[in-house]
Length: 532
Image 1 (tube, rainbow, N blue to C red):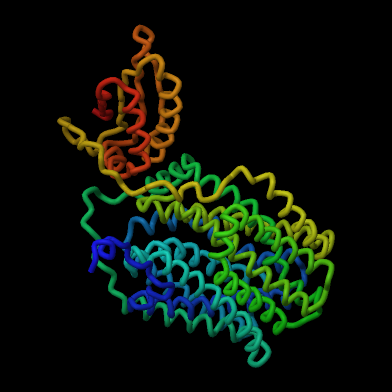
Image 2 (image 1 turned 90 degrees about the vertical axis):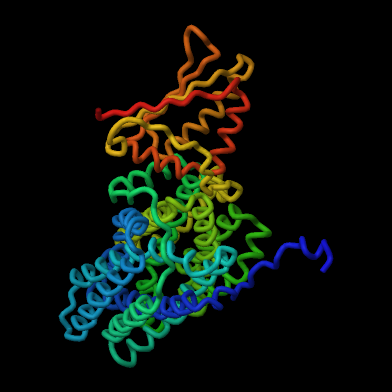
């Protein structure tokens, strides 16, 4: 082998490489089966509500009851997923959901379902989904080698859309063939598959933790603090809220579009949802080329325009064939936007806060979907379904230029891996871990000509301190010696300060190196403990 050959990089893993790993393959298949059941349940619930109550607001309430729990509980779920054994958490939640879906199926089969009871069951299932989502996302890196992680994420997205293509069509067929109870019964059985797969899977042993696990409330605060001080994540959340608030009109109104606008039955409703899934699968296949040509921001704008076109088509062309074609376009548009936003959120987050950061993304996602569903249901009740769809389409288009400055993918170029370059702090005080707050002071000596550049960098530094757990950050200049600056911030305890040491990223280190380049001599660091 020549020297050139020896130094050539290894070929990138193929798109199907993760299936070579049995844990990923088994859990992927089980998840697809479970998601087929979930989509069947959603179709059954939406259609059943149109029979129980013709009110657009009540029908839209099914979508709101599905998404509202994620808005309410996703952040708590993300914090728990970062603290507890994730496999055990997934098992407990899936068993609980299996029990709920069994009771739901029996209630429908007995003819005892009411609109309120259906909303309660839907809310319970949505709550379970809220606790599952961050944990599922967090275990994917445990299933495949790191180089194959992008392929694994893409295959998971593909699996969701495959199930979306199968589940609705199968639900529509079973409702006609067996009755409205049948999709709920199949969903209950699907949980047996996912529980069996989790029982079979033995996750790799976690490395020993040097520090004790965080408490849930502290973990939630840390996740929120990071999100509030992460420019890349905040930009992603802005774009997500702008899109989902108006795209929710499609999902909330679709049962009524099939039943009242198109005068169809459950089979048509299932076909429309299957078309969405098929469009999303096709969109996933062409998305890399689209994103390469347009970039993330223009891809999201194109997906938003596609969604607006779909809403307008439903409003002005009440034709089943046109609706099916429009639904396929809706699937392409949906996967283009959702995938781009998800990648932007992922690249904005380091590993230590990934589940919590993604749960914040989910909170915005489902919060906008829930609020939008209720708003569009009310608008449809007052002004009619076509009018509600046209208003939603216009709003989605109008927000494209208004949110354009919130750029996606800002974290893609940042190295958020732990740098571990801070020296171990010296502490001689007794019971230091239990004491707080902690005040950290760093003194810098900066030449007068570098003051402006120094202050700009320290603004970046302030966000880094806050992302790592700091609060009360200040930068003061010595009145008697203007070249002397003192940076001060607080952390809740010495234990939290030690966690901050583990969370400093390579990107933070790069900013600190630029600050040091402007200082004369080594900055002086001092720590002060409270709670004496």
